[in-house]
Image 1 (spheres, rainbow, N blue to C red):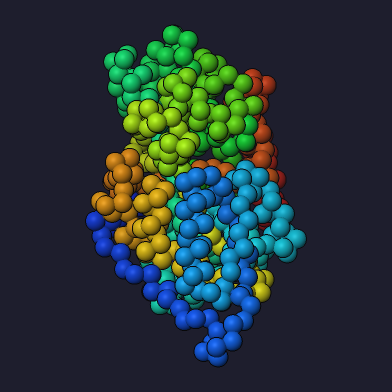
Image 2 (spheres, one colour):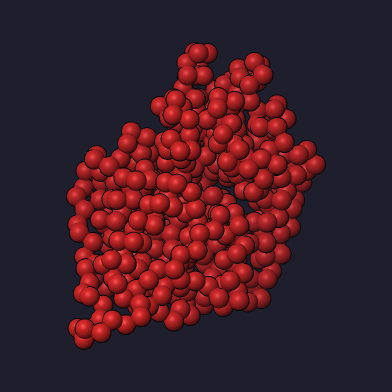
Length: 452
């Protein structure tokens, strides 16, 4: 029996995501996706059914890993061909919204969960997979606490693929040379930043050309100060609050300290993600606050200097003593895939998505990506390197995970918030100005939601 949306969404925030995974160790079943020769037994080959598929896996090691899975799928299912469009993540956000609005969505496409996906669900633009997930135990494959943000008003509108969380990646040699330890508190983080900045080294690589990276600092500081429950209540597009808790302003003021003291990459609003990665990997910055999507990047010799691959480690965002949030929470969310509600090939689309999320494929992806696939038994002692094992263990022991704000806020509110933070980064918007723009946009969104 499947739990209600409200119950499962609360579980995502309140329970360890991998309470059953440290599946480091759990065996995975076969994928159970074998098929016949695709000609219906007549001996006459028919033209394959084409499934349009959109993904943001544009870089190695993800892209070649996905292409390999597609090739293997088409061998097993010669009656289906996957026509893949790869789009850079930041360009994808606008591209997919435009295609969905125009009724031209791919049959299967990448999604972020939360309000980002729920808007499509309200518009009837993505398929409700509830019945399909209940069939043959497909829904039981997934880590239970990875599902809630894909659920909306009793339906399930996508399936999770990769669980992403944020860490400070740091240069071990640079820390050791200065006798610096991993900071456990905000004051200790400031001390680390002061040490590097005092030598003329940029403490933290930051790319904010895409606008969203900086908001992750605000999100986690708000969780630490305001508390995860109040934060979720304030995000809600229908019943949301007015962001009046003093921790909102305090968190932005703490973020402003990092900015004003020069602890970030200069002119970071003009720096893209690849440039920030290079700054970190070339010893020009001591730390990089990034997502676990970069676990594979910094272990790939085609992307990262070979001598750097064994010279970095990771720590979670420090605690903020006196804050009202649970200081052991992590920040992140699963990403996943949805099926267009108006697809002409629903059965083929479901066949592909079932295969893509099968246990055998999931284990293969863990091995090649060194990322956490949201399928039970996917992460094992055999296929997970030490960094992925650390992440899996951290997640297993965490009391909960707070989602980043940009997937939870209504789209117009999200854009106003990110734009205001870019202004704060370049010194044109104050912390109070950021809050004012956020409150105004959120109030307008609530009024519009009330009229629906």
